Image 1 (cartoon, rainbow, N blue to C red):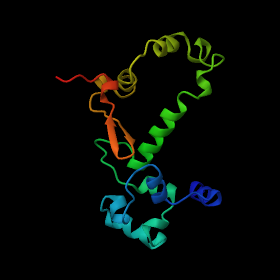
Image 2 (image 1 turned 180 degrees about the vertical axis):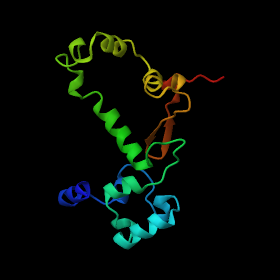
Image 3 (image 1 turned 30 degrees about the vertical axis):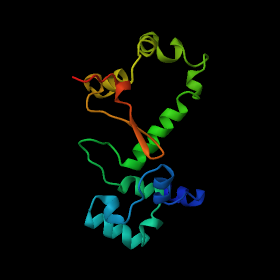
Length: 156
């Protein structure tokens, strides 16, 4: 697989190193990674020997997740969120020469400019009313802060 080969040539760190870097708990073994999937765990162990040798790219796709609540594993979720929120304000898309009606169409530009809440974006892209059922957590050291309020949630 080309992505695995590129990761090796680039010298990417193992999967567990990325977990640690992003403040996630390192996986103890392959069963921990795969959500107790014996077949996949055995194949990974045969190839890598130790969870600490598991390549980043393989680990991203082998990490188990609850498909009723998530669309990807925890590490990939955190990495995508980190990229989205750290790049949002430095993205060239926000430059005047790109961020205009010619780029997005009149209707698209009106929708973008009329959006004021993350819940509106989530609702538009998922069909969830006001982002219901979606929550985000920002981690700072040992503290976690819920940002549900940014989604427009109000106690009932």
